[in-house]
Length: 289
Length: 331
Figure 1: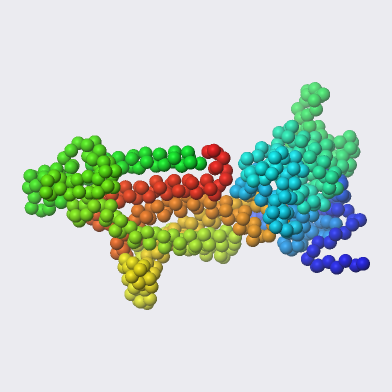
Figure 2: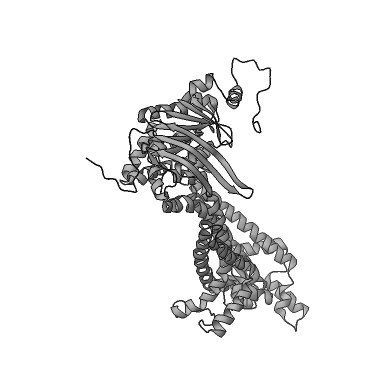
């Protein structure tokens, strides 16, 4: 039987990689001319798999994720291709992308306090993500929101659903962000430095939670971070970026044990180890070519 | 919450007491002898002394202040014997020039000032916020620039100048509006509206400018907030993002400004009322200054201060309702 699909509706294609980014470049026009922030990068992500994108500030990690979501700032120019379940995402209308965002591709941002609207309860902010794609009324959405909060291990979710973001701790707020992202059971999760604003113990809990939920849902994940220790814990493959260009890419184990590129080696050398005696200065980044 | 309100009210009473004290002090120390003004041209020192005694201004400062305060809560009597004048509580002074209690005079003028302030507020809120929104959402376009030119004109043009231009064009040349007068709404609603339209526009013009600029800045700031990116990442429709996520954070700061502005205007829009000859509280103050009717000047000053203090409390309570972060901070 042939399924008839509305032309505005994203396709549900199986078999192809979940996400395939090919030769993606992003540039902005400035007064000094065109500035390229992401230069010809390519990678793919399959279901159940996590790709870690690492690099220092300004390396183009976040721009890549925003390009996938179609959330780049005004004036950005993109070339290349971003195929999600076989469908091209670049150049799509806002209306078309809206159907994908939050539903099939969800994002978890770095700073959960500023990423949540302080004027509304966390319950409403989770509900609206669900209602935008599934509909079904506020009452049902509230039940979904409470379930989502329980799933990310927020105790007393029935009561806390009516609390505001500032009434939660940093780690709890990030759990809310994760609950919001997972409400519609997305196929792809983009986590943009989700643990950077958190202290180390909370970081470990959030990483464990993300990995567990990913295993449950089978979603693919693009995990953006500057923290190599974090990426070694969560990623199946690693993509190293510097100044918008790919320095090195490969399976996590290979990147960590046999780095080929000098930049990757310097990045790894910059990570302090507990069993190491420091007698030489660590590499300094910024301006290092 | 109730303890917060009680605390705020207590502070309001203390603030009003302080305002009353300093206002009284300024009039005691700086203003010319009102007895001389009342006495007129053919005046003898004995007559001045009699009037001073009648006004109670021959007493030491603190005694005068105490009598004034007593008058607010229990009423007071000016002078003695057959010529004594009773001023009922709350008494904030008596105008010997007009032979009326100051509060009665203010209340007589208040409907005009309230009509002027509320009508102008409706105009400036509607147009100020709309212009600011258009300007922010169409930033760096012709719409933005046109809106900001209007806003700049509002700030730059003195309202007495605009009043004269409008009167000349709309009343004298085109004859589409009558000359403003203090017509009551119940007397003739049509004429009431036509009479107030020009003063409303003139008074609102400056505020439209201020509110448009503030709305523009706030909306642009909010659009750059991280939670706006989150809202888009959730796949919410643009109209919902604007209505729910952008407007509330952008417009909440306007509440403070609006509370203060409306309170100030209820204490009299001096220039607009004077230019259009509207007998409001502002015109009352203007006339009182011209004739050195000190009890009236002081009464209007206190009355305006009272509105500002009350507006402050209302704004604070409203803010706690609008911004949930404040509720927890002071819990």
